[in-house]
Structures are given as structure tokens and as C-alpha cells.
Amino acid sequence: MSYWDQVAEAAAFLRSRMGAFKPHVGIVLGSGLGAVARAVTEAIEIPYSEIPHFPQSTVEGHSGRMVIGRLGSAPVILLQGRVHFYEGYYPSEVTFPMRVLGVLGVRAVILTNAAGGIQEGYRVGQLVVIADHINHMGWNPLAGPNEPRFATRPGTGLRFTDMTEAYSKRLREMAQRAAQDEGFTMDEGVYLAVSGPSFETPAEIRAFRALGATLVGMSTVPETIVARHMGIEVLGISCVTNLAAGLGEARLSHEEVFEAGRQVERKLARLLERLTLWIATMVEAEL
Ligand code: HPA
Image 1 (cartoon, rainbow, N blue to C red):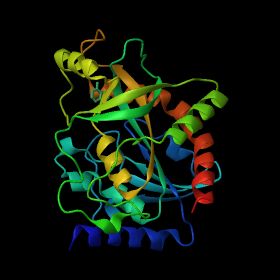
Image 2 (image 1 turned 90 degrees about the horizontal axis):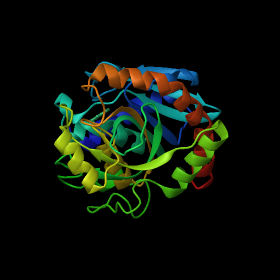
Image 3 (image 1 turned 45 degrees about the vertical axis):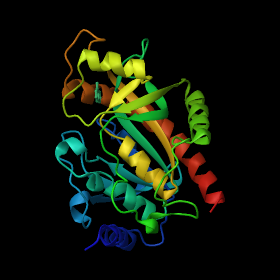
């Protein structure tokens, strides 16, 4: 069975579970950031294990289920838990869920993640809007034959995907307004993706800072690339769960990352509740 057919089969299965419900906004929740899923009403929960061909998360803190319902009053599809390259998955598997969202008709995604803070002054627990990224994973999920059927509108699904405004300016502005309404502000940063699973060395962090990165993490970039290939608008929000290697006192651990995520997840949930309705209203007006 071709990759396209697998994605189409997963999408058909989900459509059969959703009935007439048709969300145009997708949200991916990072490590320890699951609170948003609990704010979803009229929720249909589907474990990844029930969805045909869907990859299963092996990491603690990534529960591995889809939650379809309303956030605020906006229809959404949430991916609670993602799979990573460091778990041994192929790039095509890492981005499989994003492909499914595209085929289901999602027009904008909010990608959240836990990240190490590289920029001086970043504090644990702060939310940073991703303005741009640096792909340092050593691979690109679009390598291999191009599949034009993934296009969601004309001029997308191309062999060569433009990444000039990978992270939508208008969504970033909307996110800033939503944060303001919630009583906080967010910096904008540059997210550098590594393949992991080892954390970085202090020398690597110094090098990444010199390259212009302010955040480092092990996800999001493949999803963004694939979303842009399909013509899906992307908003990225990082939660600084730790200071990057060599910048803080402590050694880095998954527990620390996970705990810091837990402490900010409610703030993120409130932000996304407000923001998702705005985004949904905007993209639906443009259909
Ligand atoms: N490095 C890479 N990935 C991460 C980190 C980090 O310091 N924190 C959370 N995800």
C-alpha cells in the first residue's frame, strides 16, 4: 500500500468517526502540555492505536491519542502526543499525523513543544512564539518522491516548498494579541531542531547561539515543513522547559522538561482556548 493510500485510509477512518464535524484547525501538544486536551468539550477521543497506520508514541508524557471536539467554541483536532525521529521512526512516520490532518481539511495548525532556552534572559516556564526555524536534524521529511495529492490548494504540494514565512505572520500577531488579553507577553524566537535523543553539549549550544537560534528542541520542524508543503498555515509555540546545556546549573533530564511543561500547561491552555476560535473563524471565512 502506498504512503498516500495509508494516509487516505487513516483520514477515512477518522471521517467516519467525526460525522458532519469538520475542524479546520489542528493542535499538536508537546511534552507535558496536555492540559489543553482537557479543555475540549464534546470530545471524541481516539487512541492512536485505533487509527490505521498511525505511529505509536513510546515516550513518557506523550499519551498518544487524538481528541476531536470544541475548544472555546471552535471545532478542533488535537494530537496529544507525537512521535519523534529519535524513537526510531522514519521521517515519513514522524510526519504521518500532519499528513492526515491535511487530508482531513485542516487549514491551520498550532504546534507546541518543550524546548531548551538558548537566549540569555529566557526563563523556565515562559512561552515563546516561533518566528523561524533552523533545521539541524540532518534530514528533510520531503525527501523522496513528491506527492502532489497532498496539496490543500493550488500552488502547494510542490517539489520545492517555499519556507520564507514558514511560521505565519498573521497567526503570530494573533497569538500575541491573545497573550495580551491573558495578561502576559511572549518573545519571538528561532527554534533549532536536533534529532536527539541526547541533549546538546555546551559547545553545541554555543554554536547554535552563534547560528542565531534562541530555542532548541527535537520536534516541530518536520511537521512545519510538511504542513507548508500541503499549504497549511503554521503557528509554533515553545515552552522553555529548561535552560539549554551549559547555561543553567543543573544537568538536563526528561523529568525536568516534563515537570516544567506541567507547570505552564494551564497558561498555554487558556491562551489556546482564546486563540483557536480566532484562527478557526479566520480560516473558515477564507474557505
Ligand atoms: N534540548 C533539546 N530538546 C529539548 C530541550 C533541550 O534542552 N528541552 C526540551 N526539549
